[in-house]
Length: 68
Image (cartoon, rainbow, N blue to C red):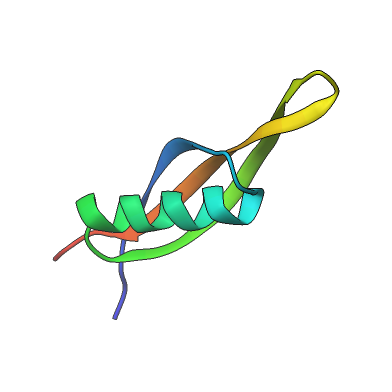
């Protein structure tokens, strides 16, 4: 049996960590998209103020399998 997947790009910001940004993004994608099968962290960024990291941001490529 074969399947077809689609990829969508989302950007997520967290004031906690990269891990939190990824988990939040995957959870949010799964609320809207059916059959989420994986995610690839395409880009990571941090926001800095006064020499300290204030936020973490990730761009995710989220894969989901299309319904037959």
